[in-house]
Length: 251
Image (cartoon, rainbow, N blue to C red):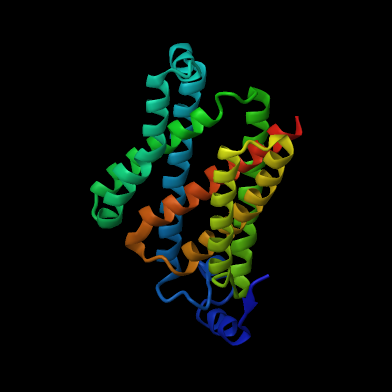
């Protein structure tokens, strides 16, 4: 568990005594009104929930509409080009403009919607060859893990724990995962490697959920709601895909 500063924790409790509104997320790093922070947190989670609902709708369309499904499963030149465009468009067409417009309303929300659609298409393509029951199992497990880790992080923040130290370790682990993914693409390794990759990725993105939730509670400013939503959304999507890999490898 994260490092605990007892002195800061006592200061937080002095400023926000038990029973006061917002005490559930009070932390040594909270400098504004807890009511304002609660409003910010609710706003971010509403955005993330809308992103997830859009992802379910788009991914279901890709998998259930026969012409779309048949097009991508055909492996024709056009399908491969479309697949590559879908994979790179979130980075080139959306993320770069988002860096400069993330605090400019409503442009940031438009870019967020486009980004979500692009990622949703990628998720839909990733589920094309998967069994429907396995997909539902992965979604259910992901939901339970996300809720559990979120509740744990809120409890830890109330107690004065801090998870900022996880940042460098998670970045290093993410780089290793990216390299491993590249190796898997170039040299297919079978179901065992898929399960190992899925297990490691699930642990890494579980860590990211704790880390980004901690940042949401303590560090993001009020006008960074889009950045906070993107971080949590990507954590959840990547955790889902990792669990899907585990279940696929265990079949």
